[in-house]
Length: 288
Picture 1 (cartoon, rainbow, N blue to C red):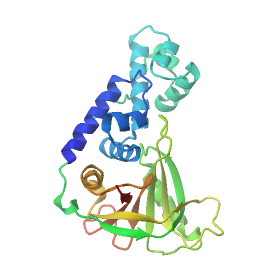
Picture 2 (cartoon, one colour; picture 1 turned 135 degrees about the vertical axis):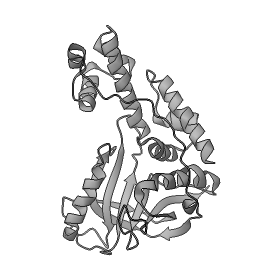
Picture 3 (spheres, rainbow, N blue to C red; picture 1 turned 45 degrees about the vertical axis):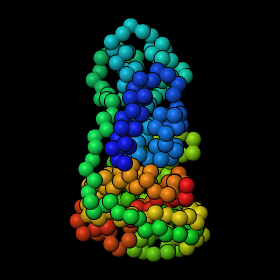
Picture 4 (cartoon, rainbow, N blue to C red; picture 1 turned 120 degrees about the horizontal axis):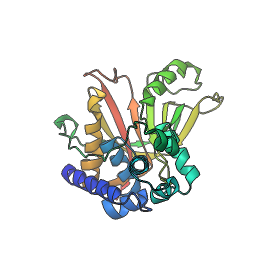
């Protein structure tokens, strides 16, 4: 049930918070604390918190390290090592990339920083419209081409990515349909702390011949997909994903069959804010 999902992920966040100074891994949290497969855990964690677990762990470590730099006399190297950064240099690089200043500058100038607080798991009331039995579709080999992104979408970069694809779509040869598009969410096989997710805004292709170098591609092997329909505005899509991964999947006879999922846009998708719109979500599955 979804209530069990909320409890499990609250426990997972408690574990992360209690072990910010320990060498914990996302794999261990998924298997030993949450009792989820790695991909299932990462997907639900991102849906519930807006962050991948690795990104969240790194931001929380940097935030608590920043507090110690300001509030204590410990050396910056000691703080870095305490929060599992291998060296002063790697800590400084990560700190500067995230906050825009170095640890030394923070200590000298007491700069205001936007720190990442402990994540709160807030239950979402599921709309009865989305509590549905999915269609099960056998999909043959699917070739996608489009524009790629790697990150955590902290500044809504995917909006600009889709805008760029729509402007450049005419440059893609061999498109299977001019009225369809796919959003491919892919999670890396090795979840390091600094890894986020890979995303491809793309279209289905007949083949990848003569693909311009500006475009990326993906070759998805034949698979069984559980296809869900999200009706209406994308403002509420989070509740649809919570239903899929927090309620339907654990209670079904299926488990995840890959490190990705797909959003499929056809002629029924009329816009992100339209109540008459329909978005398809395709989840690769196999029987347990």
